Structures are given as structure tokens and as C-alpha cells.
Length: 502
Ligand code: 0RQ
Image (cartoon, rainbow, N blue to C red; front, top):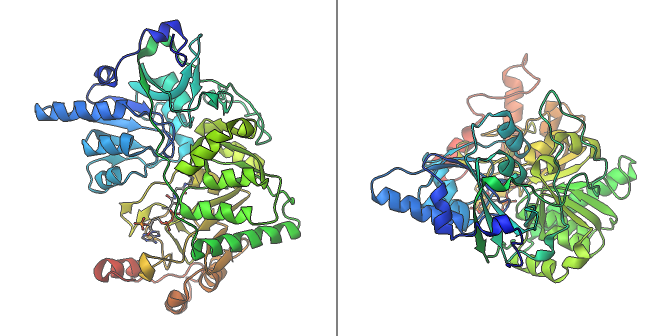
């Protein structure tokens, strides 16, 4: 018998990807595994894209609604977007082809908080889930599933779908068994109970995913790597951002606002977030814990050099080198890494209880501290809000990090008014750029404006920002709480669209 598929019942269901996709119909709602390029199905999306193209060549329309954990990869979101196979998509995407389809209006994109995606499904807000397509590492004799390199929304998709297609990926290390904690205690209101997790290292669930074998219509075998995108090398800008942040954390410890091992850290996606982790690695901190979403290369560095003792996440998000390092040392990492469902990794109750330090990237912030994480010039989506809202709103302390300019200095990341709001001034605590750090805690809006302009804005844009605030304050002396010039507030963005420079 196949060493990865030892369940006699499910072992009889092995078919090719082409046969498996016959179970997916036009208009179906399909829940796929996958989170930041890890654990997504590798064969079914391509076969489905071929089927959609063939249908369209016959003049038949064929689109699905696609729900995932978070971003997948070119061989999942990418191939389906190229085939114009997606009608509606949630929650987080970073694939450039799909991004184009969303921004051209062809795909409807629901940019929901990651912690909401599973519960909204359970509440029935998105309708019935027709098919789940979930990558696993192995199927045990009793039909339980060893999850792969991400857990994401897989539990919910497997529970909720009418039909299930499993992909068993032989590339995933069999030793992943024991790295997961799948919580099955989630009841719906009004029957919800407290989630009894009080420490990032704690196990509260099962090592395995469950599936009703009667729902499994196909099992497909693959041998394909995860996306494993490389990170940009650390540059001067990201090193400076990290230094400001680490200095600030050290000052918080000195001021007795945090223990010397800090509080559990969460770090977002992207190059800057990865650089911040590298900064922690160069710091004097040790004995830290992470309660986060994605385990990037920077987290492995921290585990390897002893800065970090333990990391709880929902997914890996490693480069090729990171994957090799993880696989070569997998036995050493066991017991130090736990992958949970994204309902739990991003749960507001747990983020608040554990008191997380949350560090996420942003596109832009305004002078009052509203943050845009998702939209370029107000209208084009970049990736999505992902977990940044779950973490920022409920954090003990949150940081939004970004270079102070984008596109070679043509864009200021600090603007009079953000062109789209993801995190409001009520949620945002600290803004960090390579210029410095603006600590907004306890500051009224007008003081926040000064702190952001003087500490975080690029010097090339500071005079214009000061001028904006001063004129706004003078314009309406009876409206000084959050002064704005409404006819100018978004003029920087308009100027960029017209001239290519803010
Ligand atoms: O574009 O690739 O075309 O050059 O945005 O910018 O500076 O490389 O930053 O990789 O850290 O990503 C907010 C997108 C930052 C990310 C964002 C352009 C810039 C470049 C990337 P190019 P950088 P990063 C939990 C947390 C939301 C989700 C989240 C993100 C590209 O952090 O998606 O936080 N966050 N989840 O040129 C126009 C500006 C710009 C700009 C940057 N002001 N205007 N373009 N760019 N600033 C994890 C999950 O939820 C899964």
C-alpha cells in the first residue's frame, strides 16, 4: 500500500487531477487550502483551469467562487486567474495575475479579515460550500489527515463542503506529523465557550484534520514544492526601520511596560516585516515567543539563534533556502513550532489575552494615524488586509512599518489623508519608517500630526505636510480637533495620477 495513503477506504479513491476536477461544476463555491504560498493544492487548480478553457472554447461559461486561507501561488490562483476561471474570491491574495483581474473588474474580491473568513462561512454569510480541495501530507489508516505546510481554513472547508478532493503531496516532509494543533472546540453563538489558550506554546486541539470519508470524491497524488518566494536582501532602509523598532522595544522594557522577554510577537508579510525580524535577531533579546500567522525565514533565524523559543503560526512562508534549512533540521524544530487554524492564530480573544506585539507593513499612513494597508491611489488593490486588522485592533502594542517613500521618492508614504482606510487612528499606535518612529499613544490628533511629520515623514515632504496642517488649522478655527482642507486632502494622490509625482 502507498506509504502516504494507508486508509483502505480513501486509498480506493485515488484518481488523476483531470478526473478529480469533473466533480467541480460551473458556479460552484470551492474552498481551497493554501496560505502565503504554502500548502495549496498543486494539481487540481491547473487541471481545473484546463477544463475551464475547454468549456469556454465550446462557448460555455465556467467560473467558480474561490475561497482560500490566504494567498496561494502562480500554480493555484495564477493559473485559475489566467484561465478567467474565478468569479469571486476571498480572503487574501498576492498573485499578480489575479490582482490584475480584480483591478480590471473581472473578479469580485471580498477583502475580509482572516479571522472572519471561517466564522462567516459557519454563519452562512457566503452560502453553501460545494467543494473543498485540500492538500495534506498523508492519510492515516483511520482516515485522519496529516496537514501540510499550512492549516489556514482547512478545517472549516473540510467540515462545510458537500464534496472533498484531497491532494496528498509527497514533497511535503512526512515528519510534519506532530507540527499541528487543530482546534475543534469552535461552537456558534450563543453557545460559544472561552478558548482555553493562555500561552503561545499550548496545545488545545488535535494533530490531525478530520474528514467524513463519504464526502471524499477523489484523492490526487502530487510531488510539487510550495511557492517558496525569495525575500529581498536587507537594504539600508529596512535595516534602519528595524533598528528604530528594536530601540523602542528596549525602551519599553526599561520603562517597565513589558517583560524583558517581551510579549509574544506577531510579524506580517513582506520584505520589511522580514527585515524587522532580522533586526530582532541582531538585538540582545532572548527567550521570545511568537504568536503569529506566517513563519518566514526571519522567524527561523530567530529560532536558530535562540532569540525565539517558540513560534505558533498557521502557515510557513519560507524561501527555498528556508525550506531546505527547515527540512534538514526538522527534528530539532519539532516542539518549537505549532501550526494552528487561522481562526485561532488570528483570534481577537487570544490576541488580546496574550497581549501581542504586532508589526505589519503598510502602503501609507496619514498625518493623524489612519493606515492604508491595501490600496494604491485609493482604488487599486495590492494584496488585501489579511490578518493585519485582526492583530492591530487587538494588540497590546502595534507597529505599522514602511519606507517613508515609494517609487524612487515619487510617492510619500505619509500623506495628508489616506486614500483608503484599513486601520483607523483609533487602532494605530506606532508608525515606523527609516526616518524614525512616531509613538502616537496618548496623543490627540493635532499632536499626532506633529509626531508623524517630524519623525516618520521623508524630509523632502515635511515642509509640504507642515504647510498643510498649518493652513488647515487656520482655515476653520472652530474645527480644530482633526483639521483638514477637504479640497486638498487627497490632492497629493491626484497629483501623482496626473504627473507621476506627489
Ligand atoms: O511595489 O513591488 O511594484 O515595487 O508596494 O512594498 O515596500 O516592498 O513592502 O513587501 O513589506 O509590502 C503593505 C503591501 C507592504 C504588505 C504591504 C508598493 C511598493 C512595492 C510592496 P513593487 P514594499 P512590503 C499578516 C499581515 C497587508 C496585509 C498584512 C501587505 C509594493 O505588508 O500586503 O499586513 N500588507 N498582513 O512600491 C504606491 C505607496 C506604496 C506603494 C508601497 N504608498 N503607494 N505603492 N508601495 N508603498 C499576514 C497576512 O495577512 C497573510
